[in-house]
Length: 502
Ligand code: NAD
Picture 1: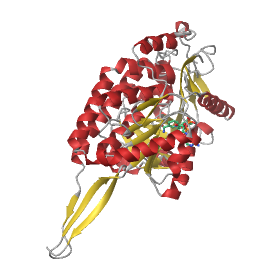
Picture 2 (picture 1 turned 90 degrees about the vertical axis):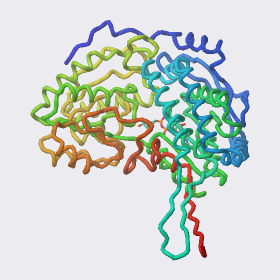
Picture 3 (picture 1 turned 45 degrees about the horizontal axis):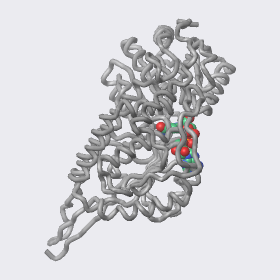
Picture 4 (picture 1 turned 60 degrees about the vertical axis):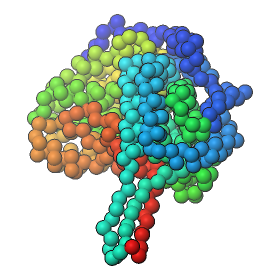
């Protein structure tokens, strides 16, 4: 077992997030109201927001009801004709100023994200830049949402396909990227000409409300972007049942995604789902070990493991297995667990206790079935939301961790012998979001990238997302795509027009 430097073991700072938020409050950056129809609505009923590192209450926000949601749908519907009619370049200009405001207030937004979500501040800053990138991308993409002209099958006719905004859209967003997941959906919807209503995760409402403030400042008209916080079922029910809501975009667990898909069937909404992952990370013996370790660290420990792209099964060719495990343990010894607002922290708390419980259950199950804990962090007293970054060696496919998404800082390493065997094992999972292949052989990379069953593949890289790429999964990892030109399609309808008798 690798031992970690004990200087890392430090209780998370009580009051740190509250103190940072106090300074943001003075700058009027912490909104406690809901944003409906261009107005800030304060309700008597409040929902508390907690710093996951300390468990302290740091703010409270208006709790919206189903009736509030109906008002928001009406406002969105009302805003649609004028927003749709606006020239795409004009919509783009508003999106660009929204993006600029996000970047201008990057530090404030990052502090909010870290305070309520827990991730290290450096990662939160990165998330804000990533989020603003989507608004900029879609500002331009809106101007390129061309249709097509089809060579006619009949003399004297002209066949056109047009792309038109679908109507009111709804977004149900998660807590792991509380700004970026909203920007990725709202950027596409707003650029396409659709109003969008956001129901953020109850754990991270402050980030959502802060970006609503910036949308207002950027000139997004009333009703085009709205944020309502409250009970997930109470708020999603009107969204799902109302025929005026034409599209739903969801990011979260497969379990909830399945439920929403079923409920959206009644009104036949266009549904896009970005669900869980269980990424296989394949490392072949021909690869530079250092590069592979660096990639595995990024793919496993980014967002403290709470990322749908996280490497859930690290398959290592047997000849380099021992050396890899040793090198990974050494790299993990450099991780610093703590409060995300403390300088140098690389692993923050889990945002939800349910994630902690899942990690612990998977570790216990793996150990019971013969896995070895090769590295763990001495952080037992950091607080209930912390999970020690843990390295499990000798993991086998009968263990829970090899089948179910972990969503925490637990690295499961499995040996393999041949290419044929490992690709079959990699594909033997109902999730198909991302996959990673580390090899020096171009032919092997080509072969396996063709055969791996997932929506996104990183060859010798663990950082491949961004506005230009179609983000989304195969199998039970989801439906549809976000980002790229395909992201716009989720908020648009195709219309075929035939001009005859020309
Ligand atoms: P979740 O699916 O419960 O929450 C995601 C969003 O759905 C939140 O806004 C939540 O309020 C909302 N929601 C939850 N239940 C709902 C319901 N019945 N009707 C309507 N909306 C509902 O996810 P979770 O419990 O917070 O996390 C559980 C697991 O989900 C994680 O451990 C992880 O495996 C996965 N997850 C994946 C992503 C991702 O990026 N794909 C993000 C978050 C969670």
